Amino acid sequence: MQINTCRFLFNFSAQDESIREGKVNKWVQCAPQLKDNIRAAVSDNLSAFNAFLINCCSAVSSPVHVVAHTAAQALAAFGAVDIPRNEWPSLLSALFHNISSAEVHEGCKTASLEALGYMCEVMDPDEVEPSVVNHILSSIVDGMRADRRNDIRLAAVKALNNSLNFTSQNFEVAAERDTIMRAICEATQGSDVKIRETAFECAATVANLYYDKIQPYIETLFNLSTTAIRSDDATVGMQAIEFWNTICDEEIDIIQDHEDGDNSRPMLYSMRLGAAIASNWRLRMKWPRGFSMVL
Picture 1 (cartoon, one colour):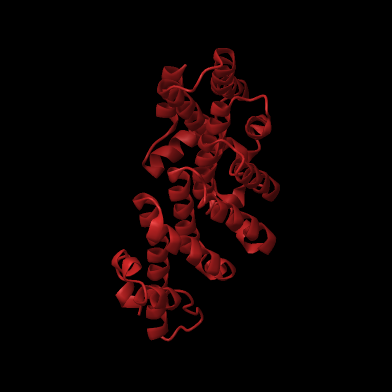
Picture 2 (cartoon, rainbow, N blue to C red):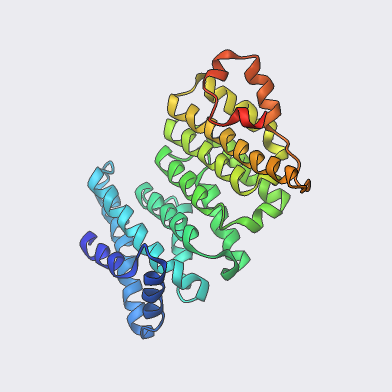
């Protein structure tokens, strides 16, 4: 199963965009029956994986994780082409079911979340129906719930980070933006180190993509990040620093804009953290590169 899936990926994926586009065009031009057969084969990989786990009733071992990861990549590779064209309507419904159903094994839930994240990383949101984007985002956020197992929650946080550019229209709606930011902030307090680290990575991505939108959340992010820098695991603290480093990078650009006569964007946040650093030597010692350029 894994070898066949890898062959699919090799034949379909490419780092060079022009090569990938050529492969996509060949796929689009394939006969409908052939495409249906291939989709069924790729989907069966994940279904068989789920049945295997349920029948074994055992912990997910490392080799099984690799199979699930590969199946998720294959589903995403084809889905990212087919979903904008409305050519594989059953794929998303199957992934949504896997994530929400209590009858689906946790390993399959993780792989389904990975597949959604990989697809979001590639797809153009302007080519996907808004209702589909909303459903994808809702499923990912549902996977981030605090009552989820840590492996599922981590997969969901990673998927959210991959989808933040894809869900740009959701950030224009205050209620939806609140939901996303609440999920990120809650994940920074998760019981697993990797979840907390990845949640702060999400926060840094938000700062990079949506600096002008984070003002309502900056107080909470300030408290969460400074606490992580002071007392959490070093990997979490460094990612919390990276959030503020991203803020600094954005504000360096704003300062340059101001010097060039463009005052349309205010610089809002780093001066506040600078005061905290000045009064806390331990925090100051961990401060990211370039902050003195902003002050």
